[in-house]
Length: 77
Image (cartoon, rainbow, N blue to C red; front, side):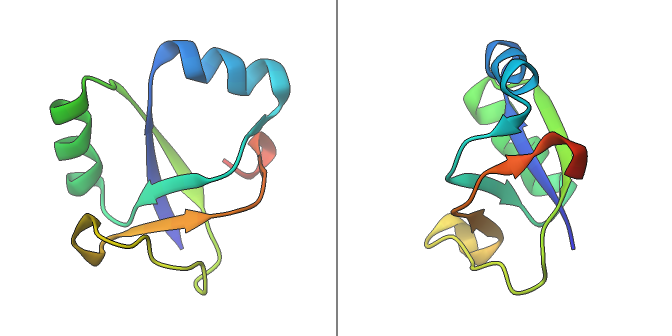
């Protein structure tokens, strides 16, 4: 499934240097939810990621976010 991870330029630079996103990796199920979160937090970068369909839902977040508790390799973007 396609999900959307909201981040900052500084964190994106760390991801690129490391080659992965450290867990927990949280992402929204829809781009509109990611955009809303981006505006409310000031995090301007939205990455499109691919999670497995059985990735657990993140508690709270209106039941529209997922969380992966393993390293996310950037080649999977």
